[in-house]
Length: 71
Image 1 (cartoon, one colour):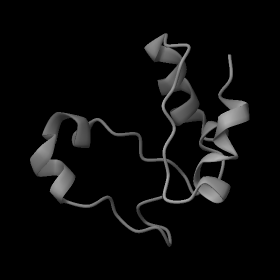
Image 2 (cartoon, rainbow, N blue to C red):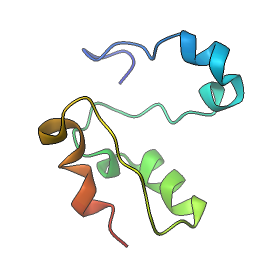
Image 3 (cartoon, rainbow, N blue to C red):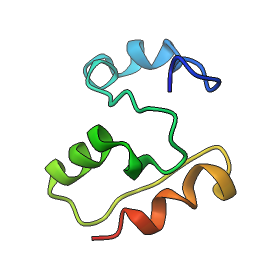
């Protein structure tokens, strides 16, 4: 999504958490993050059953991903 309307991730994150910044999943422009195969695979690979989902607005940024991320 960094080459879409949302724009690039803030470069300050690279200074704060460089390893995590480089290892981030560069999702496609899907509203539901779990519709992106790379993102869904990365979440599944963690083995975690609980996720913390955050966004700028609940109605757009998190509501679509929440139900589809349930195990």
